[in-house]
Image (cartoon, rainbow, N blue to C red):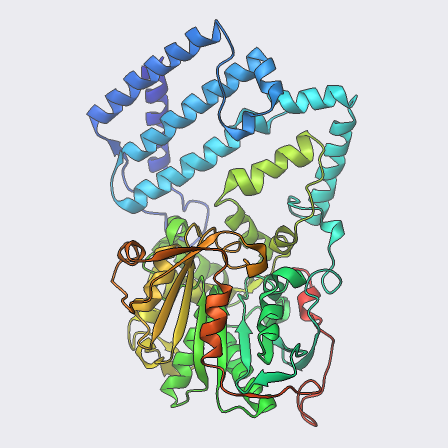
Length: 558
């Protein structure tokens, strides 16, 4: 039994490595798929372990249903159905063995990561819980509801097909500008790339240096302004900062030739200069989140090359500027993949928002895909309302040339950290010239910007730095207001930034709760004296209040 199982998967791996993955795409070279091999001793041990565990499982099933610790099979219906319980136990045994085989692959780290990722995807999709014929819980619910759950599940599926994505939350509950993105403000400038929103002060006085937030352009800005109680924007305003945010336009066909240079020159740099002009401030403070941080840092390098220093301090939230450690996303990136994207859309075209959203979801397939397939369709449930997941489903497009440049010069070649290697807006990029105080935040369990990747910015930027590590992941770690009293953060005050993030963590101190208050104290130290809060938006006569926040651009669907 074990020998046959192992041989079957050896053949599958061999078929994988013999496939011409570029076939059928004219002009695209086939991927160079490395040969996959196993150490004979490891494979033999896996076979023996599998035979032993399969035998134990069979013997146990003759006496009682095998215990199931996986949360996908925790419902009592699985335990009460011997066939379902046994099929789930066999699935879990096969999954463990396949993952052990993936770990036993001999080869370079990238090959092993790709095999591991492929096996994880296959096993997540193959779970018996995903199929009505094997899901004891869904079957029991269908019986209990006299088929109503199946009818509701079919209706849910048709609705999701209509909207183009699997529902992760009850989207009917939310409306942008009504109960998410509700901080009071107004659009004070716009061009074809972004709307600049200024927010109404919540304090009688504000700091003389205004505060500009640059969110990722691969998502919508209101991740920073979900509800009043968890809004980064509202929190900044309440701390006495005259706050502005870039609300990116959701690109359409008219923007399909826009480049990385366009976004730097006509969005990030434009926004900085407009905030300066509106407020009359010589310098402002800036914050970049995820790709927004990469864009903002690049813009500051361009400005530094031009002899300008308009930003007094920089906050980077889960941001990569050194792309040496990109985590699981590295499995997708190689020369052939980037060449294909360059040929496909490097001169024009659009990366659809839903394609990008699906890629990120499948980085955690059980949590962000199959969990909702089972709940929505097999059990006929409506997922509970959750503002963060509503935002997560509100996808945005990206211009092809922008995306192709970004892939090559960051993820593939890591050129931003190589002084003078790449030109942006006609200037050679040298991040050593971005010599300003910087607050760098990374999330410990982040699967998009690994904690080591976020920490790497401390090794690149020359100014005085403070690094903060928060608990949880890419979004939940950032959106963690003090009032919630959740999670922990880690910091060290000795001013040392060893090369390895693990070394930094070894010398850090854990503190319960949010990191926001630490950041607020740091930002206050760079915000200047307090002055009377403005009584209106913008600056007459050149910058009049336009659309009320959150503006028009954020409401455009992909």
